[in-house]
Length: 116
Image (cartoon, rainbow, N blue to C red; front, top):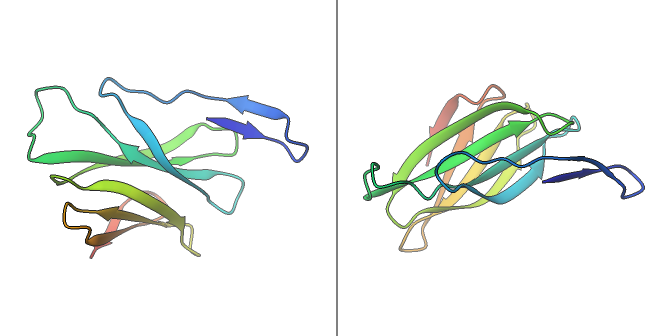
C-alpha cells in the first residue's frame, strides 16, 4: 500500500502480510489522515473450510497498524466494502454466496458493535 502526499509523491510504502495469504480488497479514509483497510485471508489447511476469514485493520496516517480484527464468515462470503462512521468507527460490508449483503459495525477501537 502506498501513502501519497498532496502532490502525488510517495510519502510511505508498506506491505501487510501474515502467514495466510491476505489480500486487501477495500480501503477507505478514516477522516483523520489514517485509513481503514479490509480484505480476505486464504487460510492454511488448519482452518475450518466452512468459513473464510475476513479482516479489518485501522491504519494511522503513516500506514502503521493501530489494530486489526479478523472474523470468520460463512462460506462464500467476502469483503466488498468499508466505510468510516462519523464517530471514528467503521462499517464493513460483505456478501454471501446468494449475493445477500451483510453489514458489520465496529467501534473506533475495533470492537464489534453489530452484524446485520
